[in-house]
Structures are given as C-alpha cells and as structure tokens.
Amino acid sequence: MITLKKLMRLRNNIPNKQKSTFLFLVISLLLIIGTPAQAGLLSYCTRALTQLALPYAVEYHKGKTATPKDPNDATSIVLGDRIGLGNRGGLYKVNKGSIIPGVIPTTLALVAKIPHSLRLPSNSGPNPQAELEMKREIFTFELLKSQWEKVEKDSRFPKNPSWEKGTIPVAPILKEFESKMGTLLIKPEIHGDSLKKLYAQYQGKLPPEMQRSINEIYSLVDAISNQVKTPLQDSREQWTSGRPFYTDINPENLVWVSNPAEMKLLGLKIPSFAFYEITPLINRMPQFLPLRDNP
Image 1: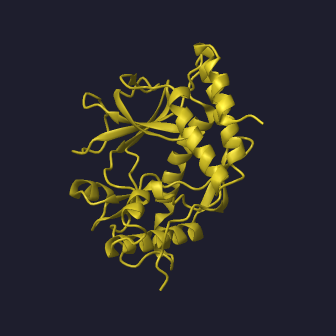
Image 2 (image 1 turned 90 degrees about the horizontal axis):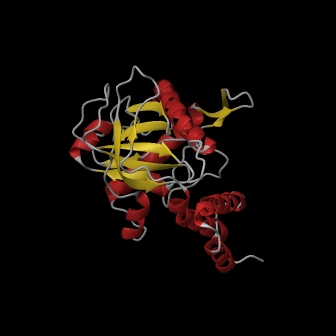
C-alpha cells in the first residue's frame, strides 16, 4: 500500500519541471477516491491533502493583467494577492488601477474569480472542469434571477426576510468576461466571518440574530429547491433542467455581513448571513448547516 510518506518521498525524487504534473495526478486521484465518501475521515483527509497540494499545482496570477478576448471591451484587470483557493478556481484582489467599464459604482473593493490553470511545461489554458464551473456559476446566477419571483411566492420562502424584496442574498457577479486565463468573474469583496468559524467560536450556540438568519437561509433553500431545477449539461454541451436545485449550503460558503456599505450592495435590511456564491450541488451529496431551530 502506498502511504503518504512514500508518496511524498516519490515526489521529492521527481525533476522540478515534472512536479506539477505529478501533483495534478495526485489531486485527481484524491478527488476520485474522495467523491464516494462525502462524510467521515476519508473525505476529510482527501479534502485536506488536496488543499495542501493545490498551491503547488496551479498557476499563481498575482501581478498579471487580464483583458477580454472581445476587442470592443476596454476592461483591464490587474490582479493582486490571491485570497482564496478552491478546488476549481482562485480568488484574487483586483488592484485599484484596473479599468472595468459598466460595473456598478461602488466604494467596496473588488475580487476576481479565476479558473485554475495547471503549472505544466506547455500550459494550454484553464482546466476544462474549472472553466465549466465558472460558466455554471454564471448560468445558475442568471437562472435564479429569472426565477426569483416564483421563489419569493413559494410558501416555504421566509416571512419578512433580512433582505429586500427581489434581492438574492449573495455576493453578485458584477461582470464576467472571456480572457486567455479563462472566464473571469468580478465580484465585490465581502468581509466577515464564515458560519463555520462562527459556529466554532460560539461552540455551537449561535446568538439569536444569527440563529434567526440561519432559519431564514434554510427556508430560502427549501423554496429554491421547490421552484427551480438544477441546470445540467448534456452530451451536446447544452444546458438543460434536471433535478431540484439543491443549494450548496456548506458553512464555509456563508458569511455574516454587518458592514453597512456591504449590506446596501447586497440588499440586506439588517445584518445577516449571505452566500459567497449560490450554486447547486453537482455530483455531490447535500451539505447541511450545523444547526437549525425546529419550532
């Protein structure tokens, strides 16, 4: 049996230019064996190992400039520090010197979400699965906006929620465009602690205002799954409706928003949890929030 110690020894004996390929294969293996086990020690270990390997296996875009393939779009994004790293993409600060025509004027900082490109000798651009994830996020965000009136009328929708009517409690996609780096998403930078961190901080007993917000999120998720179908991609690469839209409510995907400027941009009437992104679960088991009050 190949142990982690043997695997790392093998990695150290590989020439530098081939280490990225090796790491990519390791990440792929970890994701494959981790997919069937959505809970428990195996899943936790594969996620942890993947996160450790990702920084070495994917391109680091700090300091680079991203421009649209469309010559009529004058957008020019100068990338700053990478502040987030997921299995499919990285999140970078957008430097103030960037030019983004058409973006809603805001005093908030902006971030760019970029699909992963592997550090290979002959880099051919973004990883296809990472690129697909970006397009899926755009598609589902637009889908929810088009179906939101139905969602709000659903009996499961929270009564008098923390957000304004017609508002989706999520960091909005302000702009998206195609570039050599792949599809880029521009969003406002949302500050605050994740539900995962707050749950640990309060030892499982959230303050009443946070517990109320969690109940609202659950009711919202119920309404969405009852009214919206998950978009799937068929063999012809056409988006189609599939099963109910089961929203990804991973506690790391929810942030407590209390800054007045951020609340205004997100359409929040009072401090509340909001989604970093509101996407459906694809080929994964539902992830549940730590606690919910059941009257």
